[in-house]
Image (cartoon, rainbow, N blue to C red; front, side, top):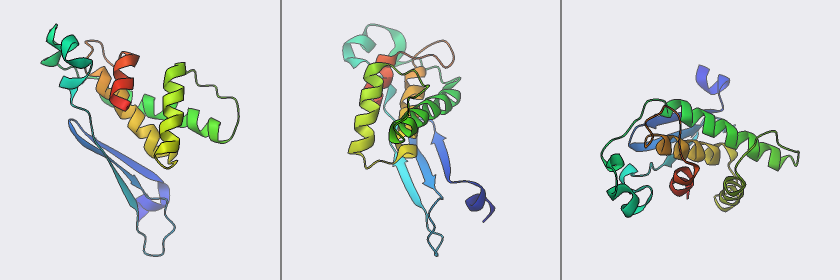
Length: 147
């Protein structure tokens, strides 16, 4: 009961297994809530077969910092989408292509800002597992995962 009063959402990640977003904000008298299941991309398929076959990224993964990247990507997307929804100038500097894709997917998927933001954060984190440095990713990899 305490969590449902203090929180609107709970986001859960589980490595290569699907992530879940639990929406506790429902005001239903039955205290029901929505659960979104978000599939995590197969890291061995990012970048196309030719790119991965040419190096050892297909077998070496670097998950350190991925959780931080989920948080950062989620918050950046959330701030961008909230600003767009409220029709105010955003202070978030997103790649133009990312901004366009994020806005399009938000509309296509029914307009849940938190769920869409979490999906984007997961894409950033997934892409970061391909890089040796912590919490660093190629925007092209994140876009490929997100789409």
